[in-house]
Length: 101
Image 1 (cartoon, rainbow, N blue to C red):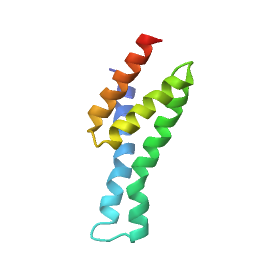
Image 2: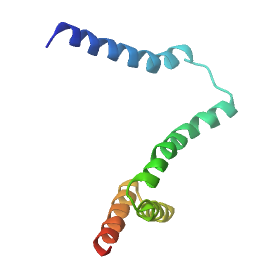
Image 3: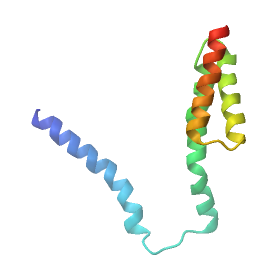
Image 4: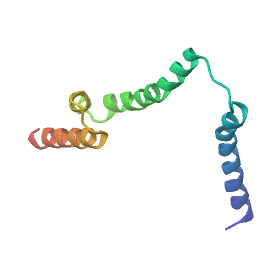
């Protein structure tokens, strides 16, 4: 490997490590306000929704394909199933839909 590539990989590692380490160092022993804790707890759900929703609309030429998969996932997850069961259930429903259409 060329030395430039090695230094680039090391640089990328440092650049991604610093933002992950800084909150632990700066906020050690400090408690965040309740409102800010509530906002930060909801960030993963908002990000996941923002990543998944466009995929639902543009996954296939037929918009009902994505809507059916999303509906199956919502129903299965509402019943209290594990994440893996939700994903496999959506795949099964869409496989059946593809088979019969």
